[in-house]
Amino acid sequence: MSLPLFRNAAADQPIENTYSPLANTVLYHGDVNAVLPTIPDNTVSLIITSPPYNLGKDYEDRTSIDDYLRFQEGVIKQLYRVLKPTGSICWQVGNFVEDGEVYPLDILYYPIFKHLGFKLRNRIVWHFGHGLHTSKRFSGRYETVLWFTKTDNYTFNLDPVRVPSKYPGKRHYKGPNKGKLSGNPAGKNPSDVWEIVANDWETAFWDIPNVKSNHPEKTIHPCQYPVELAERCILALTEEDDWVFDPYAGVGSSIIAALAHGRKAIGSEKEADYINVTTERIHDFYNGTLKLRPIGKPVYEPTGKEKVAQMPAEWQQQLILPASQSDQESE
Ligand SMILES: C[S@@+](CC[C@H](N)C(=O)[O-])C[C@H]1O[C@@H](n2cnc3c(N)ncnc32)[C@H](O)[C@@H]1O
Image (cartoon, rainbow, N blue to C red; front, top):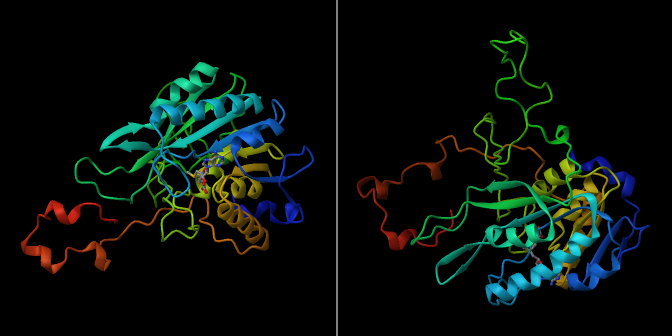
């Protein structure tokens, strides 16, 4: 699997600013509720997004959790309408935190989807190794992706997202297949908790590095997700030429993933700056200059020899770090 597969094929496709059945890429600048009525029923094969978490980031006004969920419920109703019967929705969320109390957004969203008739297929754990250290609870190191389908007859292609088996030479040791190889030469199911680390596929977490400053994909957006996260869902849940829609497109990570694999893409985003970055990223992708972390690239594992991996001299005598120093530090 490599990203530039469809770079040449779609390079001359214009980016449209409103939906048309003849378009290849639609980037709508404005509110998701304005673009939704322009998309016909049963059109989109995959909706993949990370909605605003109502945390008061630059791009959002913080409201009560009830008002926030009511707004999202209205959007999700429309998303159900535009989704094809064989289609899927992947809703990537973390926590809403108020006065130190944690509200896991996937738990709050689940009844909304269920009530509309969506069926949950996986609650995928996306694990990342870096982030803020907290002092009054354990530091958060994962978010989730709720994968729902509209019906029981849905697209699921396992082969493009298989990962290498840890023991490809393993054989059945009893029964009618005794002595025959038990695995699949194309690799194994990546499971709902994925880690892509060097040489250890079995104890996997979904450890696609979070998009922070050292990541090649980092842009001005404070909460981008890695292109690879969207790629996996797109490869497994859609076919070539299908429509992929990200209603909260940010800087277009889902759009890039869709175009890279020969899918058509719709994104809506209310912030002009992010629309501009997305447009630039799409052009850079087609020019071959967009920096992307290749799908499946192992997460870097320190060997222990790096200076930062060693116990500093100052701590040799004082092994316990005072809590005040460890609060809110970034790794
Ligand atoms: C969590 S970010 C998504 C980031 C995206 N996954 C990426 O990788 O770039 C949510 C985005 O939704 C946008 N947004 C919030 N409310 C919106 C609305 N009503 N309509 C359209 N976009 C909205 C925000 O500006 C923000 O960029």
